[in-house]
Image 1 (cartoon, one colour):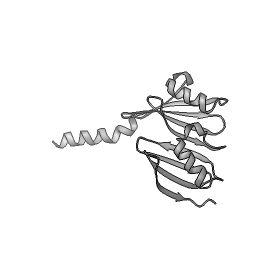
Image 2 (tube, helix red, strand yellow):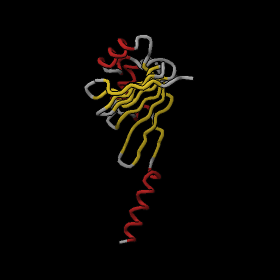
Image 3 (cartoon, one colour):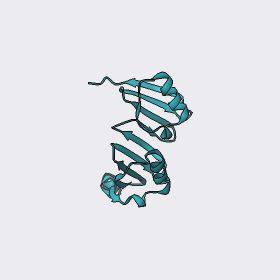
Image 4 (tube, rainbow, N blue to C red):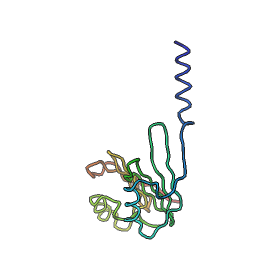
Length: 147
């Protein structure tokens, strides 16, 4: 029994080691991801594309020219967009969230959006962080003081 526990413990501790991060060609991205990139960033060039494999998780990370970083699920759906040299394109932001931001923060731009099936996290260029539920209702707001 003890030997089995040690074997299991060793396996669990080795899981992070089994992670892979492999550079791929842009054509190897899922079609859905390529379509999103083309629509949201029509003039941008893909600088780097990686497939990340961690245990049962597979995702893609893409870096574009102009300081844009994107993450996609295995099926090509977008999970994160971060822009360091400008705002996240409106096409990537749900309309209810976009309307809320324009009304409540008219002088701010969205520089990062991340979402999963239950939560949208938004970062504004003024340091504000907002969280919305899957129904696009605001559930949290934090203001980070910028230096």
